[in-house]
Image 1 (cartoon, rainbow over the protein chains, first blue to last red):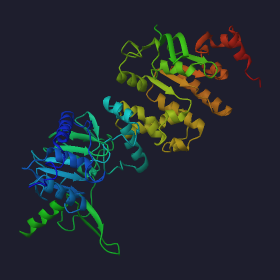
Image 2 (image 1 turned 120 degrees about the vertical axis):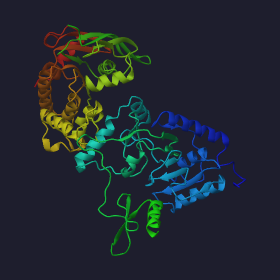
Image 3 (image 1 turned 180 degrees about the horizontal axis):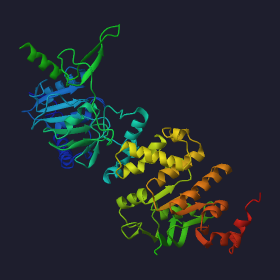
Image 4 (image 1 turned 90 degrees about the vertical axis):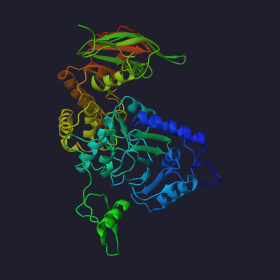
Length: 280
Length: 256
């Protein structure tokens, strides 16, 4: 049974309806940032207040929830959000990507391909992709309304001029459905191709800035680039030290005082599955 | 031939204060029109109204577009007006910092308009940026430097390059030589005159410097207290001023 002191899934029903309306609008206009009345949540801004509100608005007793932080199921943020929903929403939780119906994530998209019916909820710190280029909110809204996105291209030009290549590695700007410029939240650009025409629904919640946006299933998502400097994802010379994967996003870890380094999958579930397969 | 830009009865008030009153004129293709007058005479307000950056209280501005016929600048949708402003028009600010993106390199500054209208080939954008940097007489090895490292005169030249890269037909200039020392001014004027000639630009140039007006403009409007008190060919106005205020203005040039 959920904790009796709170309404189901923590938020009151009116708030959940308000958030659902925002989500519906966001799904109807892919990539458009819908303002919503963000509530205070029992965790600080920057820890996933946006994502947790979106999850609270869509979760039901039949759902199975997975929460990851930087790809890992066992980090503080992931563990506490998972426990929070187990307590207030009485849902099953899992670490396995295939079993989950809702996956709340910070900074990664799972390596295991998602399927229709699954929902990926992103925690977004800065929803406005143009924020660092144009500080005025009135102006960025105008730029979105008129789809004037030259300034984003300018930032990529600058990156090539300075570094010889597009050096942006995370929060890499994308154009959704050929219309709205969107910040994919700070996922590595490695994950950008996974957003494109993904069968799962992607919901993005920004708690501090009180914005919700969405990418419906199978929506085209294009990473910006130049004709002569095409979009590229990160590659590694190493493979995962634990499971041997050459396809997954690797974290570099320093394992001793001598500077010994180890590359391992950032997606813990994916890594574990692969190791279990091997053992069989 | 149709005028490129024609203003009719432009009036702009700020509360009870009248910034410009009943200004009408035609600007013909290839012509450079100077607007002179002392500080506070409504020159910049007029320029902002012409360029669609400010909405006049009365009057209208008609612009002859390259392909879509004559349009009323203030009746256009914001999207069309902004498109016009970054393709067929240029706007050179007195303070280059207002017209430049100070946080990105000169090349990116020049390339911005190209990217805004859909250029997506880095090499080509960079090539155009280099060409324009050369045309405004800035060393090519400064291409990747930020405008913050540029001198005042270079910033102003960079701003001009950034505006001209989309090959506009009409450029609005607000005191482009203000705040520069005399030798730098002379060089900039020389450059501007060359560019106007080479690209058949039309321009509206606001200045308080009669020397600049004499060098660059074909026709001159003299403003005082928000009204045009005299207009005519530049040489005529400066050599044989009719209005008392113009006479005073011409007489107050310091002889060297």
